[in-house]
View 1 (cartoon, rainbow, N blue to C red):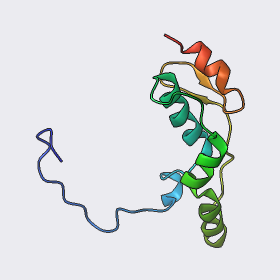
View 2 (view 1 turned 60 degrees about the vertical axis):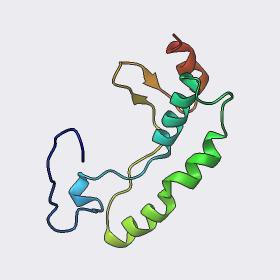
View 3 (view 1 turned 45 degrees about the horizontal axis):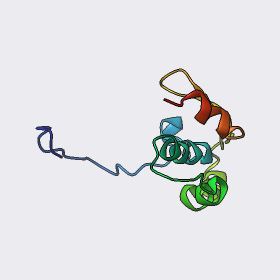
View 4 (view 1 turned 60 degrees about the horizontal axis):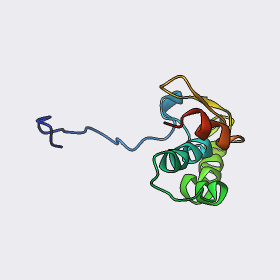
Length: 103
């Protein structure tokens, strides 16, 4: 793994689904936020089609289908999130987020 972390051995199935709420569902809001970060840091010249890209990346419909079969609750998506630097990212108002984090 590098960084002198040594050899890691994984026991059992480390690809998990839900695990009593420990493993979160894929959320489009995070795809929107990642893309906004690319815009924020100048890695994208213009704003992307957030919805189209998030739809392709998250596969939340597949998650919801399996979750329903397993009786697992599906969490709401596209809710504002508080970032680690105390700024709220609202996927319905990305421009406000980008303006508030402008350097």
